[in-house]
Length: 84
Image 1 (cartoon, rainbow, N blue to C red):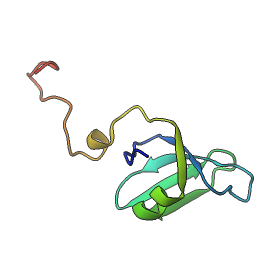
Image 2 (image 1 turned 180 degrees about the vertical axis):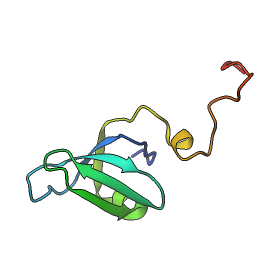
Image 3 (image 1 turned 30 degrees about the vertical axis):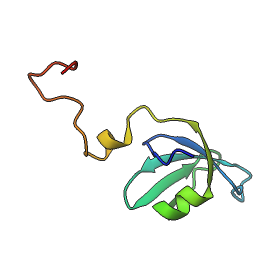
C-alpha cells in the first residue's frame, strides 16, 4: 500500500467507529495524524505508525501532495516558470 498521506485524504479504516462509519478525513499531518469522522465529526489523533497500520485504503486522495503541505517541497519560486 502507498504510504503517502495527504491533507484532506478520505480514508477507510479497518474497524468501524462506534457511530458506524469507516470513513475519516485527514486534517493534520506530522508525527501524529489528525483525522475527523465523516459521520459524527469526532476528531482523533493517531501516531503515524498506528495510522498506517489501521488504515485499510485511501478512498479519495487529497488535492495537495504531502511534500507541499508539510513544507518540504515548494511548488515553484516567484519569478520562475512552473516548467523549470
